[in-house]
Structure formats: C-alpha cells, structure tokens
Image 1 (cartoon, rainbow, N blue to C red):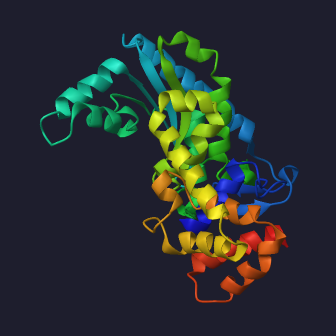
Image 2 (cartoon, rainbow, N blue to C red; image 1 turned 30 degrees about the vertical axis):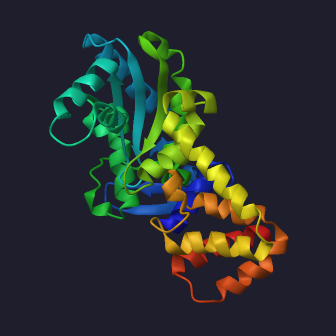
Length: 325
C-alpha cells in the first residue's frame, strides 16, 4: 500500500490534480472499454463527476428518510459514506447511542474487555451498526457497475444497451472527492436528525483502498473541523499529539539523520518502529516530512535511493525527488 498511500494522500490533500483530465472512457454494448479524447466524437450517455455527485446526494437523502422513518431518530452520533474506489461502491452507515450501548451489552462478558473498551471498539465500527443502506438510485448503481468493469479491467461483465461515456478522472479515486463534497452538501439535511453534541459525518475508506488509516489520517479531516474531530474522537487527538512530538524529536537531529529516519520508517513498513501507522496515519506523512526537508536533503535522498531498498520505498523517494528537483 505504501506508494499508493502517498499517491492517494497527495490527491486528497490537494497536492496533485486528478489524472485523466480532458480524457474519456467509452463503454459499449459490444463489451469494449476504450479511451477517447473527445466525448463529441461518439454518441452515448455522458456521465460526469457532477452526475455521480448528484446521484450520491440523492442516495444519502433517501437513507436519511429511511432512517428517520424507522423510528430511531434519537441521539444520532454518526453518519458515514463508506467508499470503495476500487470495486466502485458506496454504503451509508448511521448509528445512535442506544444501538451502540446495545452492541456493547451484547458483547460484554464474552471476552475480557471492559464496557469502556467495548464502547471504543464499537463506536465507529461501521460493520457492526444495525443501520446500513445499500440500495442506491438505479442510475448510480448502473454507473458504478460499469465503473467496476473499468477499474477491474473486466469489460466482459458490461451489460448495457447503449454507449456510456465517463470522465476519465473518475477512475483516479475521484469517488472519495465526490463523497467528501456530498458530506458538505448534506450539512442542512443533517438538521433533520436528532443529533448528539459530538455528531460527526464523514467519508470512510474501504479495506483495500486505505481502510481505517486513510479514513483517520485524511478523509475525516476533509469532512469536519479539527475541533469537531477531537470532540468526537479524543483518541485521535492523542495520536496526533504523539505524532507531533515524534516529529519534533526527529527535527532535533542533523539533516542526514532526519532523512535516514524517515526513509527507515517507510522501509520498515506498517509495524516498524516510528511507523506513521502506529499514530493512525499512512506513509504519506513520512513523504511529507521528507518534502519539508527541502532541496538540501536531495543529495542524501539520492544516496539512499541508489542503495538497497524495497521497490515501494524507491517509488516514494522518486516522488520526493521529482517534487524537490
């Protein structure tokens, strides 16, 4: 995941544009997926990122309708759009304090965890929520099934009666950016919910496209203010403060040692000492620290790049050198 973490991290943080701008992907009834330069050169139904956003917004509104109609509109503390940019799918999750406490009580006594530990475990564990919504509007379901054929490179699964033309940027994980925009667009719709003081609405990443680490390190922060985040998830604040302390300690070292530290962190992976993952972040943070060292660090980075490193580490260093050079 390492080089992917940096690539997706740059996109979500606004440090790189979407790839494929100005290009289009044509899906045909003959089960072909072809890249084209102009949408006007082919007849077909055009699907833009705005179309996907509008359909997702409609999906969220219908999930809110269904949730409120279920009679559970009380002490709602979370709403999330679970996003799988690889397989092309969205799920909506909602939960309230009563159901959270019920989950805790059902699990209590079956292992050695305290109620408080179980509460922390279940609070944002979307898969354990009783309120999950997966019935997307028909057009969104259809578009995402085609999107899946594109990303999985399986045109044989296309079942369409006419041409569809997609903006190519969609397959550069744009589903995350669309979902973030929808969360902000829903701000007034959330007023229909009877919410707790620490209610939080955000985008979460499916396993395989960043999972909890991408969610905590970046997606959450694009959806809510730091104050709201820390109020809802005080344990994230603790991790942030610990990471800032770790960065400060590294900055006291000579430049070449700082370079070695961050490259070592990337090289040793998720379970290595000082890994950003131990602070609920991704290798994008190590990449950012290398970038911050500036041009003076380039010779040291080049020297390390020439040595024995994993391919993933070298890919990240190449991104740093391209940025610095």
